[in-house]
Length: 364
Image 1 (cartoon, rainbow, N blue to C red):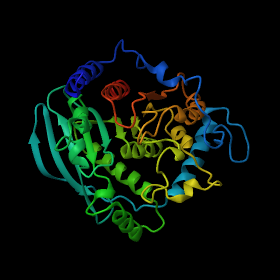
Image 2 (cartoon, helix red, strand yellow; image 1 turned 30 degrees about the vertical axis):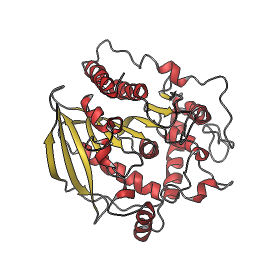
Image 3 (cartoon, one colour; image 1 turned 120 degrees about the vertical axis):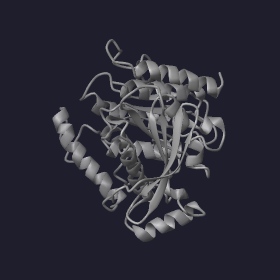
């Protein structure tokens, strides 16, 4: 099956799933296969804190108790990540617009943080359904083409995931990561950020900018604000993990090969969390972010092994730990791992499953 064939398949899936929900299954048919850990999943590199226990050792036995702990945990993470300024008005303008086959693609410029204009593509289906529809923030991976690739302007067809999501029936916003915003290198981007915000990590800047992408999505009159989702691969998956944890407006997400475990990838890079996350006495870990996303549906995609592969069986301890929190809300937990086992690149089948996941959980 070619990627074009895959795109046609996901359009059919999305068209069916965006129809009125009477008689629809509550979950994707394959949920059990992604929420059931394998028998041989390895232990984490270090012990993960019990999420159902408060800082002073008290057991958490109810959803209400977890909600209190969630506030404390969220605040602890935000203190570590550092402050960002109050977002200004978007003041978005369209720089150019073009009509593709069934899609309108517009390049927007808008206010990111105060005094900084940033760009994002907005892609809209023209005639799949009437009225409002679900929206997706699609976060691009590490590539010098940035939004040009994910929006289908340049690059190989398998990089055009934002365009494919629009072809599947979503309104899609593809914002540019700050690491490629008017700079010549990643180090220059980090240096500029630190001059503006010396107490704020690069990952917080990425979260802030992804949330501005949500704002741009919500500014589109044909987007249903109750059906906002997110998708990201590689670097974009890292951003998606944080966006799901800290922005409750995002109701479902797919994070492909971002690397949940600190040890799985370069979380200690200066544009992410820096060296603190490698310290043996560091108090935070990413199973906490998975728990902060509960009970919203979140699918992690892993490639298991090979160059750059960041998620796989080693991700299960984090998912299993967060299942304890998801189970306070509902059963089964809608947090799972789709391990395609083919390395870091996003496979055609995994992308089709991603679209089905987002279509299903945002289609009501």
